[in-house]
Length: 211
Image 1 (cartoon, rainbow, N blue to C red):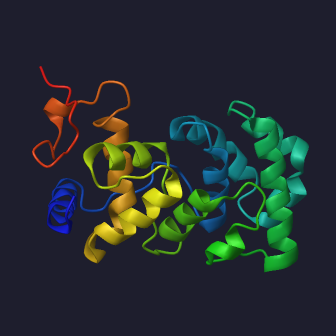
Image 2 (image 1 turned 180 degrees about the vertical axis):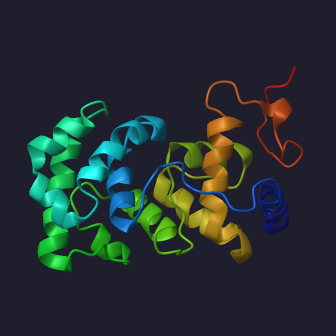
């Protein structure tokens, strides 16, 4: 796909949703970080059901570390892989207190040192909390980008690199949100809703699901 077609895709996304946001609920960079860690292999809706009570009890690294792993686990037990996630949330909170003065770092390299934080999670935090134009490639973005022709890649890192090259800078800040929303509600995995698609005429997917 050429850059002109890519630009038109994101121009349409922008007209439909000028200011897209993550569907995870949070109040500060720390609660965003915790929510994203908890969202691995889980839905945003599922995470949002568990986190209000957790964040009411602990919305800073200091409070979360003081809460302790066992109590964190009780708050998040409705989320998949909750034991490992509770451990990560507790340990990353301690690390933030001990090594970063209780503040979430605004650099990818520092974020990726935290337990449970990989490149995708770091990119989400950098984008949503620190307004950096990152590309957080999740399963939706990987699927949609390769399906419609924005990327031709074998893994998330390749997808991220290709998207950063082809997406015009003026659309880059919101791009990953637009792609996630498109993949979550229109370009779904099994039966994409092609007849409802905003970019149907620009999509390079050969097996379009049309009536």
